[in-house]
Length: 171
Image (cartoon, rainbow, N blue to C red; front, side, top):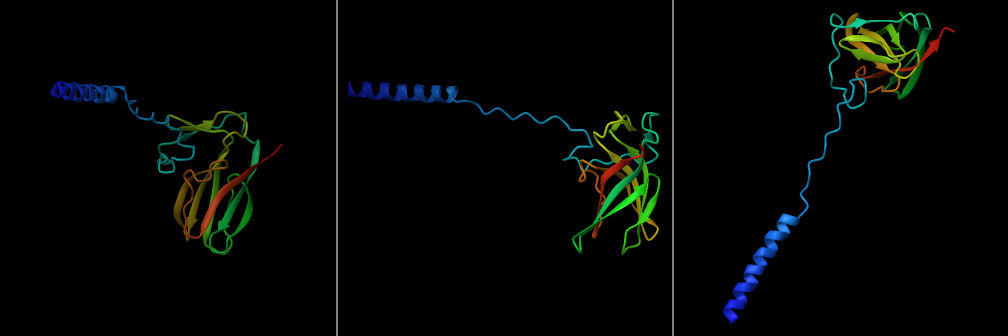
């Protein structure tokens, strides 16, 4: 009888363990976050199309509405910043350097659709300025600076950080 009781206990233990494994909550893989647009944080490694691949469309609604942008240059060595009021299409030289910044198109609500750069609206929802930066006459950066997302496609330099502080309306 003792032998049968031991077999029953072993059998019940096996059944219990098998059921326990079957009832255990299985860990489901976490869903991946949807891909963000390239203009949002977390995608600083996305390559912007070259100038030959991009087309910029400026609606009549925004033409001439902004005349100036304020760009901030942070000197990483001295930990000091300086604001530059730059006309759209204008340029300036960063104090104490041979770095020149040329501004291009300003888009108040930057969007990209099929390599067409345009604005979704005339509101300042995603302000961006196109810039070209040269050092000693050699191009070292060409791209967009985003006011709300300064670390997306940033200008990378050992000494200076460049950001779009704000646009200034002509009206």
